[in-house]
Length: 218
Ligand code: SF4
Image (tube, rainbow, N blue to C red):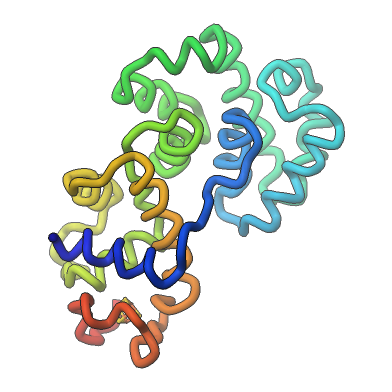
C-alpha cells in the first residue's frame, strides 16, 4: 500500500464517511462549485438557498433569469457579479450542449476541456464538477488537499510539485475508485481544517504515523 493510500485509510477510519457533495441534483453541484470559489461553504449555501427558494436552481431557469436578479440572489457568496456571470455561462453551456444527459456522453478529457473553456471555471471547479456532478474518476487537488499531501509525502515546497496538476495526477495514479476519490477529497479538506492547518497540530494528529513532515515551515 502506498503512503497516499495509507493516509486515505487512516483519515477514513478516524473521520468516517463525509457524504459529499451536499446537493440534490448534478446542476446544484455545478452551481455550488462556482459559488464556493474563494469563500466558505456556509456562504455558498446561503446563495444556493436563495436560488432554490426562488426556483432558479436549474440551467434553464438561470439562462432565463435577468443578470441583476441573479447577482442579487448569489450576493451572499461574495464577488457576486462575477459569480452570476459564471453561473450564466455555465447554465448556457449546459443548455446549448443539449442538457446534462448529453454532456455525460463526453469523455472525461473532453468534458474537462469544455468546462475549462468557460470563463470563471478553473481546474478546481472543473474537477469538482467532474467528480461530484458527472461521477468521473478525477481528484480535486484544492489548497487543503495539496497542503496535507505535501506534508505527508514530504514534497519540498521549492522542488516544483506545487502546481495543481502534479497533485491531481499523483493521487489519480493510485488505485482509487471514483467513490474513494470522492471520499478522499472530502477527508483531506476535513483534515486540513481540523489538524493539518496552516500551523499544523502535529502533536495531537492521529495521522502522524504515516506523515513525513519534519516541521519545516511552508
Ligand atoms: S502530523 Fe502534522 S503535518 Fe502530518 S498530517 Fe498531521 S498535522 Fe499534518
